[in-house]
Each structure stands twice: as C-alpha cells, then as structure tokens.
Length: 218
Image (cartoon, rainbow, N blue to C red):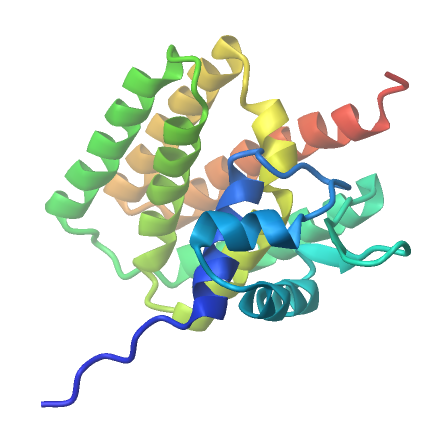
C-alpha cells in the first residue's frame, strides 16, 4: 500500500513560524530570523525562506525594506476588515450546521469549555489559546465546509497576537467562558438565530477591545 507523503521541510517551517506567532514568540512588526528558525528545526535556510514566501502570500508576514521578513503589523482598519470576513464566513458555517446536534458533540464542546475554565487562572496563555481555538473550530467544523474552515483559520492566525492582548485578563476570560456557555446552549437547543446572535456578540466584543488597544495613544 502507498504510504503517506512525508511533511516537507518547508511545511514544517510554516507550522513552526505560525506557532511562534500564535504563542507571541514573534510579535507584529518583529523580524523573523531565518537562521534561528532553521537552527531550531535542524534544517537549512532554504526551506525556511520558502516557508516565509508562502506565509507572505497568506499575509502573515511581509517583506522588510531592509531585507528579510517581518511579522505583518495590522492597522485598526485592516483588523476590522478581517473581523468582517470572519463574521461572514463563521455565520455561514453556523447556518450550515446540521440540526439537531448530537448529544456527544455538545458534551465534547462543554468539556472543552470546562478545560478552558481550568486554564483561565493559569498564567501561561498557550493552553488557553489552543483550547479556545479547539472549541470554536470544532463547532465550525460541524458544517462540513472544509475550504471555508481553512480560510477562517488563516484569518484567525493573522489576528492571534492581537487577540492575545484582549484575552490576557482573568475577568475577560471569565466573561468569555460565560459567552461560550450561551453559545453552546443555543446550539444544544437548535436555535440557529440565537446561536449566530451569541457568536456575533462574542466576536464583536473581541473586535472592539482589540481595535481599542491598537488605537490607544499608549
């Protein structure tokens, strides 16, 4: 039987750079040190440069005037446009979720939010961000729209460093958890309009907070 093709070195580098951006190791406007990435992965700089060109096409990084690549820095207007695209795509996925949703799926989403609650008080944000992402994308994935899901993931990647600032506070995390409960409850009841309304409010609060950070004089 044919075996699965091995993940290319460039794909490994893409995944590693995305993870560094998600985790805040690389911040908006910060240079991506190709030699350092290559050294960490134990590969040459060639696949790292190929990875950066792919990520440039996605908009996660951009070419630096002084050479090399930097993590893309978004303006408040650009960020608002990304949230607009997210709203359109996420709303369509939620409308396409087959109802009623299986009880096991509701239980899995509830468990993810409970694990998120356990992570809320811990100082490290990596677990929080991953569980939060898992919860949302498990829900979006119920629609079965793989290409729409992939594009939504790309938009999430571009705004991750900014959302990390918004979700760092404990009180904010408690409110996010409560909003998740309401979203899951609407899904449990099969109320699509309420599900979309709750998700719009959830996303909208995030957008306003992140844009506020970007436009603050400080």
